[in-house]
Length: 299
Image 1: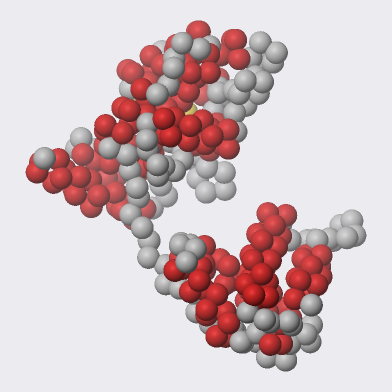
Image 2: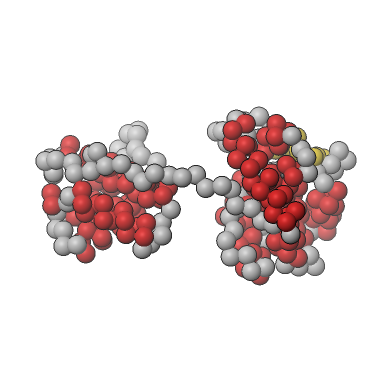
């Protein structure tokens, strides 16, 4: 009974008639996963239909996610939001008479400081790249470009050949879709410039031999534009080799921001390089940069 109602709800989110507006497919997948997980938990508790569900059931479910599954507060909050939307549907459909979680609050989300790599970890990460093959030359160029500019991974894989100016040692970054359309012209360090030149001269032509007209700067082994997911698999492989167990795609970006502040760059300038719309977004790095400097001085 529990699963049947979930399946019917998920089906109702998908447009069956042409021209009828439906819910985003990624949202539907997230809803299905969240609700199916809750269904498994409630079934273990002996709950057979949604009318039996109490706020205590859901509170215990949230605690299990926090204490036993070690889910982050943001994940728990999202799963509770999915349940709230579903319970509103159940009540509107007459399947339940009262909504037990209508007034239930999500766990308080404490924003974590950005996690960064130390200088030693960055160097060790780069050392894992075998730059004696086209793919390795490409990977080294990508890593150096990220660390030298602080651009997002999504911006990196969106670069085209025209965005790189080797003579001026700059790269034009178009910004993140939907959030920052303003172009940024970012300076390249001498090392990043050298690695990008090596890639363009010695590796890219080999990778694009089956797609010579490809305009993407960084391509996969098929000669097509590298995706964000493809880059993530690459960097995770090098991180494992370097014994860096906790890494995210944004870590090099965060590490760049900390490095710039530690080298004396003004916060506004770092904001411009990162493409932050608001200075408050950049300010989170200031305290972390000061703490890192203190730690270095003690050592």
